[in-house]
Amino acid sequence: MLFYAIQRIGLSILILFTSMVMLFTALKLIPGDPATIMLGSRASPAMRARITEQLGLNDSVVVQLGTFFGKLLRGDLGTDMWSQRPVSQMVMESLPYTLVLIAAGLGWAVLIGVPLGCYSAVRRNSVLDRITGVLSVATISIPSFVVAIYLILLFSIQLGWLPIIGAGDSGNWKDQAIHLLMPAFALGLGWVGYLARIVRASMLEVMGENHIRTARAHGLPEFQIIKSYALRIAILPTITLLAVAVGGLLSSAVFIEAIFARPGIGKLIVDAASMRNFPVVQGGVLTTVFLFAITMPIADLLVAWLDPRVRANL
Amino acid sequence: MTPVCAQISEKPWSEPGVASATLRRLRRDPMGSIGLVLVLLILFCGIFSSWITPFDPLKINVPDRFHSPSLVHWMGTDNLGRDVFSRVIAGSRIALSVGITTIATALALGLVLGLAAGYGPRWLDNVLMLVSDSIYSFPTVMLALTVVTLLGASISTLMFVVIVIQTPAYARLTRTATLTIKSSEYVQAIESLGASKLRIIIVHLLPNVVGPLLIIASMDIPSVVALEAGLTYLGMGIPPPAPSWGRILQEGFGQIRTAPWIVIAGGIPLIITTLGFTFLGEALRDNLDPKLRHVV
Image 1 (cartoon, each protein chain N blue to C red):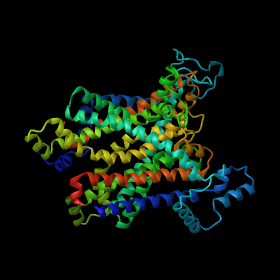
Image 2: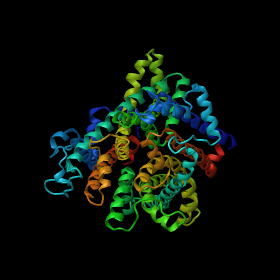
Image 3: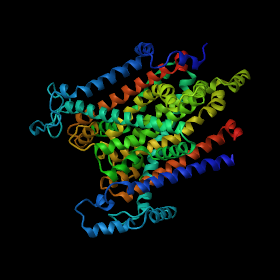
Image 4: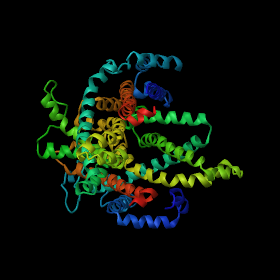
């Protein structure tokens, strides 16, 4: 187990390192002078020189790479060119909004999707199973930003029930929860069907295994078999899937946050990207890559720890 | 029962009989049929958009602004008096051309890289896989926003981003298939008979790899279309005045209180495209997978 953990974490660090180098070299590979690109062609030479100095573009590439990683290890993501604020501070301010959004979106998807998948597997070919089958394919494919816009049209414009903009007053959790309803629904909708499908497929597989037959032969109640023996194993692929989901959700959150004007990391990056403010984009993207990169090994290790069959083979 | 590999070798996917049998089976599958109809509808709109748009999608006609849907303007008009229905139809050409061109390019690149990784030296395999894993570690939209920040929003930037994102996926699939086929007995037999690597790749590997890959790629088209619309919505995709669906949504969102029909019209083609390709892709996959075929 320990060897597997070290191997898995080592691979993640290597991937993380490569993606950081890619992000760093991206700025070097573009044709033209980065300072001109960020400031526009009308910028004065003095301004260009200041930005070049600020980004450390005068040093050699090796020195720049060293400085880049040195700063990263100290948690320094650079400085915003316009407001002169540390990027790490801006990221930390916006990150909680995104994390809450993702947790809420994924949370409701799990709460509905997992039982639905379970039910579909146990009552195979029932009406609900067929409806779930069609709806899951349908909801997976509809882009979350279209769902978000249609929700706004229905619940905010037509019915006037829910607020559109912002994340609610800070400190007022009720207001924040109300502001979270539509974004979380739009973000999680696609995953409800997807989770239901995966849980259904993996439940069907597990239900045919020997240990379930043995449990049945011992006369255990069906509910207990499903809960204690089948779902415990069938849920494992879902955990891996949830880790992959984090990447997809971080992407969708960008659109959702832009539409609902939620001050999360997605909106931070979009706003910075529209002004071609590279340090903020770089810092924000690095943070999301880091988040995504640590989720995968955590999920793998969790699966290995939860599944006695995997644990035995390690 | 015949083993699975024997079934595959009896009937390669490219044989004409398989195509017509698949089509027959597709017709019996309600979801597959709906998917096929929707995809054909979108393809028709994309190909013949210049002929079937009732108005010029770019023509500004301010006196006619904010007309609600009527017999003349089926989906109403927007804030500049442009016919929304014509813009939606013209948008299908943009969506399809971006989707199909980028996926085809990524597919070609992925095939070459995957074959190189599977058939080439070990170090090349390791390097390619590390790079592809690293690209995977970026949430898609984040990678897109980074590139757009550096290169500026344009249709070529958008296509570049999609190709960068999709190529590793196809390279990976090709690599896995290559490694499996490479170690199979029939390839070893041909190798021992003295066939060149190039011949093995072109005559024996490619036909086995391309079929399944094409289905997977066609299922990726809706996500590329959605990404294009999403980025254009954010102002990071196709610049105005091109009537991308994302642009229609973005302009409509600004007028959502006065002219809600614009966002409704902008969202519908995206839903049709994603549903159509997903339903069709699912049905095709179920039909062409020999294991599933016999279960059904």
